[in-house]
Length: 223
Image (tube, rainbow, N blue to C red):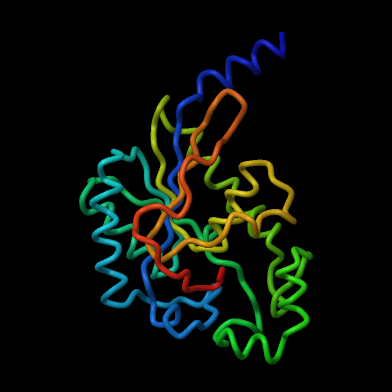
């Protein structure tokens, strides 16, 4: 009986879609300065990126939008809300990785001061960058938020999650059931690009990754 009930639950949710959308450009992105949970606003270019991407994402007819409460993500989400009429739910659990002493440092400064720690992180070892969060801890807080909002979607419904490069990558890794050592293989997202997860009979599948633009460099904490 329990097995039959479980099968019905999987079938009833089939066809739902989650779009994981990274925020637009910030000044710290251009400076290759680690933002983490620091609350940095969009540049004028970042606002323009969000407006362009919002017009594209609106064609997916999202049923719900949930966003990080940091300014860069909230402003990006606001552009999609303006063209779709959807309300935005904000959740601090979707913030970027807290990275302690790394925050505010440029890429070169991180390499100079924390070279061994940086190398260990790139090897896929569990590292508290700058004394901050582990990537698995970021997934622990962000992935349940996405699943909670996805559960409320109608069949074949679409949720747009507006967040940050590192948080999106770890969330995708967790929802796909990948071992955390392999999350790095997903690669980063360019500003205002997105990835799409679709729900099938055996769980979530990656349908698109870093979509929405011609190839551009990944400028941000997840570079």
